[in-house]
Image (spheres, rainbow, N blue to C red):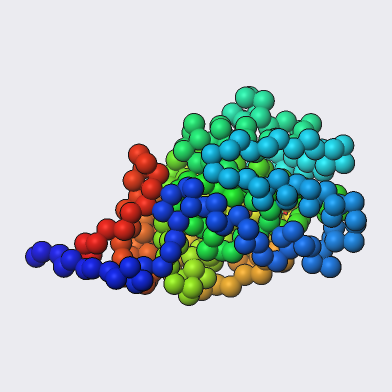
Amino acid sequence: MMSATKTHPPSAIPWFPRCTADLDSHSVAVLQFGEELESDYVGANDPEYRRRRNEIAKIASMYRTGQTIPYIEYNDNERATWKALFCRMKGMHEDYACTEYQDAFKVLEEEGLFTADDVPQLEDVSNFLRSRSGFSLRPVTGLLTSRDFMNSLAFRVFYCTQYIRHHSNVFFTPEPDVCHELLGHAPMFADPDFAQLAQEIGLASLGASDEDIVKLGNIFWYTIEFGLCKESGKGIRAYGAGLLSSYTELENAFSDRSEKRPFDPLDAATLEHSIVDINTTYYVAESFACATNQLSDYVQQHNNRDFKLAYDAKTGTVNVVDKQ
Ligand code: NLE
Ligand code: FE2
């Protein structure tokens, strides 16, 4: 049977980024803690910390596609925070992190990009990742909307904060910071299967309805941020960044205080989460490739877009294809 050709009046397709340069319009929309910390946040009443965060956020807000990510000279206090977390988590990772994470971490150390003594620079780690999986990092001032944040993944771009968590609470922070981005996310983006899973979420988010964005945001949360996976001979391991960058969260996931469910995108899509508390439920994927297949099926059946997209890896652009 011939497939029907659908034509779209220009207004039927909402605006969404079609290439990495289009992401430049996202860098300003920051939510929640962002540049203005909420008053009960641990660093909010420390004026020097607030000043420093604003200074670093300003650098990110001026960043445009194609530029080198500016280096930040982290001070003694900031380096001490990184070191404390780095050393604590490194000990945990041997027992709880997935093999893909551990392998990439080892290479990052061998190449001198990851050390306990200084906070790695986003530009260096970005160049490393680009050569591994085509992912690159892009600085951001703080939390973006879930739509803007996920959209970038379609182009294998990952938004990273550059400021560091407050020293009073090193082992858990509710918001992303450079420790979370680098200790949690970066090693995973070196793995091609994981990179594919992340990009699929990104592609599904382009032009999606607000309702579908909430669902995809939950799926992102329970995979890329807090996912667990099975590993033969080793049982369950962590691959989610929020686990790999937080002693408190990782300990909670591997305790019997939390529930573990087999990964099911339909179930995860509607399980709400709080961004300020540790999770009570985690999903265990069979493998990244399997989770990617489950996600494609979910998107095909439940993501209510009436247009189709094709990603052109050579040019890094997304095109709307008319044929349904
Ligand atoms: N709770 C994580 C940490 O302390 O590193 C950050 C989670 C960001 C979503
Ligand atoms: Fe994250």
